[in-house]
Length: 244
Image 1 (cartoon, rainbow, N blue to C red):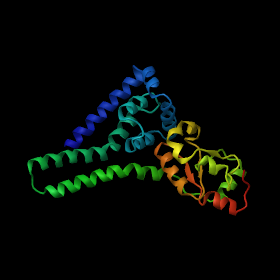
Image 2: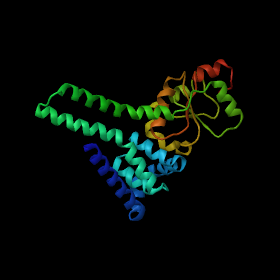
Image 3: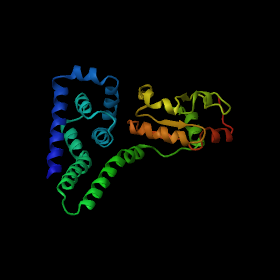
Image 4: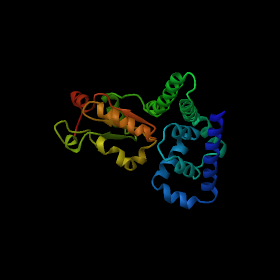
């Protein structure tokens, strides 16, 4: 019952913020969200309620700011409320039970160890969900041959090389037309890539380890079509494909 109260209260608060932003304070919200608003609008237009579900499970934005910002998108109120209620449920269950287990610990209730272990397991599940959802949003790995075919066909995509700047121009060279943002700089430079939030982003490094880590970052930040190029520049050069 506590879970229901907590979840309903959070949903009502989120709905109120949504309505205030949509009908009363749109200019203020747009100013506070800045560049993130475009990312939210693109996400909602591309995925609708599924985007709301994603950002409820994966906390990309501060909760209160997110509620206001979503009010400026075109999502229907009914879709927003339902997706919010359903996909905040896992967290509500975990945190409500954690409070219950804490109260039992103070009171010295029976089965204390089992209750604490269950609370820890629920928290671990909630903590793991964002990574799981991000993984599900990543596309399959591509071979260098598949990448070459896409480039030859003139497809609208971004080849993002996540090696350091020195490696990008170093011995292995780089794929012609590739853009270079080092893995270490990627979280701070995501706004530079917003034009490709709903387009294919193909990640390249020396092999594919750095690319896999970059894919986690992009998928967790709402990029919908992310692929790691298997073998990276090592395989690209082994095939004798052109490099810059």
